[in-house]
Amino acid sequence: MWQSYLNGLLVAAGLIIAIGAQNAFVLAQSLRREHHLPVAALCVLCDALLVAAGVFGLAAVLAQSPTLLAVARWGGAAFLLWLGAQALRRAIQPQALQQQDSGPRSRRAVLLAALAVTLLNPHVYLDTVLLIGSLGAQQPVPGAYALGAASASLIWFFTLALGAAWLAPWLARPTTWRLLDLAVAAMMFAVAVQLLLHAPGA
Image (cartoon, rainbow, N blue to C red; front, side):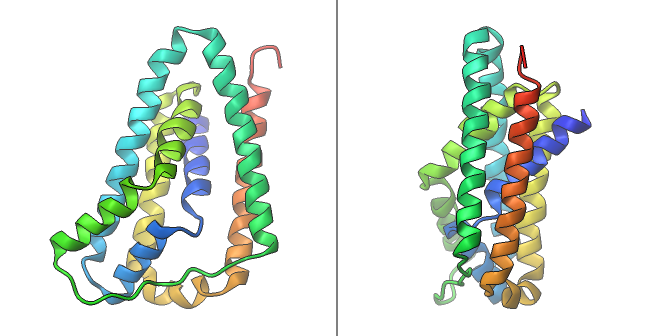
């Protein structure tokens, strides 16, 4: 159970902790203290629902097909290795997370904008439903894996929301993202190796 939970935590953390529109949006709202906690909660909820759909939906399909399970395992491991390589490349040429500036908005407008940033990004479905979902469907305890992935989202977004004023100077430094990307690469490689070592016939 704990191995599945840790795998979910590490994989989701590696995907979430990267420079992107969603992180920039949450950081900007948090720095302005403008509906930042509802925004963080909405991001966590969206991630949790998408991961659960992927984990439990794909689990039912993969359980009925050893061939699809093997394809998902090796394909997932290859994708994790690719993500790790991408993180290493970003570490060589780090960027900084910049906040977005805009005028005051209502809670409804802010939450709708957060939904758009989250759900209109095609990568979110690749990350949560397909990648995290296919890996979770292969875990001994898929529910623990999904909980671990949701925990990573919860920790990250509320850390941004509650600690934005303290984190902003650090997140504006390319060196910080170099270290984060190195950690992400290590997590991606570690989970990929663990997945391959537990493949049938490995």
